[in-house]
Image (tube, rainbow, N blue to C red):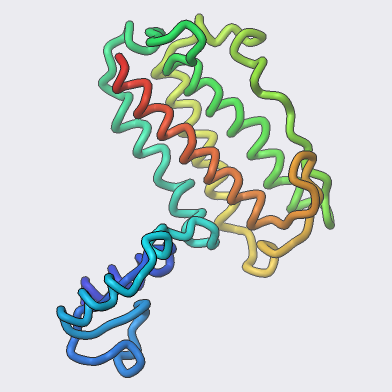
Length: 211
């Protein structure tokens, strides 16, 4: 049933779930954090700390979901943008949308793709982290075309998602040494990619609100 599948998917993505059902969770056999009557739902919510309702974005399923959905979010926000809005800045020191998308595209091509391939080719690889903060000026992002950069980002992310789908479950625990974070593993490194997505999706919303 659709509502059962939805509950199972939400749990995989790290979202707390309560199935309103006649049976308690221990007897229902369903993938939910809890289950019971509607009054039981109210009691369950009242018993939780608000922090417990924060989604867990660190599982493999939730990381892949974020990485897969980010292009759709960005495209829905930016595809119909007026041409001059790409380069408009609310504050002089802020990035504009053109710089942001060029940053995401080049990070996807040159950093994320490299990190995935390092894990495929090496045992306990060293993961470098280049300084991307200088790219906007060095690479003259201001004179690029926004929709073209967005399309190139989409293609780069599609390639990386295809690479990730072919990684075995065991390989997600493979160890590495990160230039900034030290000892780590493949899941955590790919989790950093998802965190980077969430940061810049929020930044996109913030820029659009100021335009």
